[in-house]
Length: 189
Image 1 (cartoon, rainbow, N blue to C red):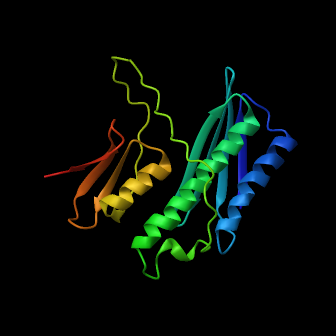
Image 2 (cartoon, helix red, strand yellow):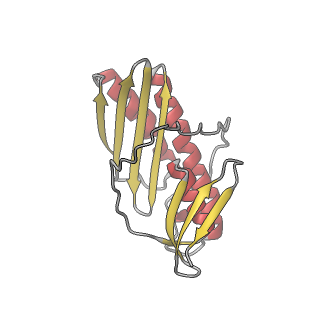
């Protein structure tokens, strides 16, 4: 894996760089072959909070996690736990359903260690601003998938909604997380 580690309001010391590479490198044990993808790590200090974001784009899979803690090393450990949970969830749930040769099941090793503790992801902060100001636009290809896979992708990315092309009816759909913890599906007519 190729590491791209950058810091905002913090100097990326050799010790910090080595710790990140050592911890994220442990993810290689989940794969049959060492992934040749880039690992984007953003270390950020905001007031007393230390924030770590890790993004690992891979073929047919995007691993992404972020965590905030008052200690940078603890935040790195927490991000690694989230990434391991994402890999386990993807391996056990998605690949149980999709058994064709093009499936991602051949990317992962068969044995997985059990998770020690599953911590729920805290809700995103709510903004109370009456002005509508679009500050970013994202463009992406809609991948054909069913609603269950879209929910898994949404959870892996840590988002509250996910837009996808429904492989069953061909329409553009949105899955979203409800306040009661369940999921909703929006279908266009």
